[in-house]
Amino acid sequence: MTVNNVTLEAVAVAKDGFPKTGLPEIALCGRSNVGKSSLINYMVNRKSLARTSQSPGKTRTINFYNIENELYFVDLPGYGYSKASKAESAKWGKMVEGYLKNRPELKAVILLLDIRREPSADDRMMLEFIRHYNLSLIIAATKADKITRSKIPAQIKAIIESLGLGNETPVVPFSVLNKQGREELWGAVGRAARANEK
Image (cartoon, rainbow, N blue to C red; front, side):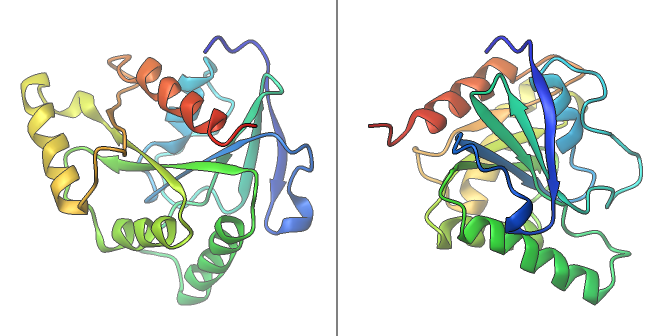
């Protein structure tokens, strides 16, 4: 997809702050510091639209990025931040589940996983949320530049087997540094956004 116009249109913590345009939405979720902001910036050809940080736990709101007035990327707060209090974690769960449960515009969720690591308990919890609400799933296996290309297929296979994914779930190796996965991910996003169109 060619992106010329993209804006951070809404920053919200509850339904009353969500956009009311009816455009399809693709949510992005993953553990803190897995690379959501970097992925968003690379996907829309911007350097600092979504703010990146070396410190995990930076995103504490639900951020809606309007892309070409065609769809939204919805950046959900990262999970698994070790320094988060129980109260913060509970607030995160309520916010994210409220969005996933009650958003008819939501067409798919991109779950970001570090390609080098076994999916965590928090990753599996997020996957259960997605499955419970019968949402379409796309996996972005980030930080693919951290391993050799020859090891990527085995790591992708390990993720698929570990999470019990079927053939219907795209699993895209992704790296901003190696400029890898952008077109494949846009393809999966486009198919999801057009699903169920009348």
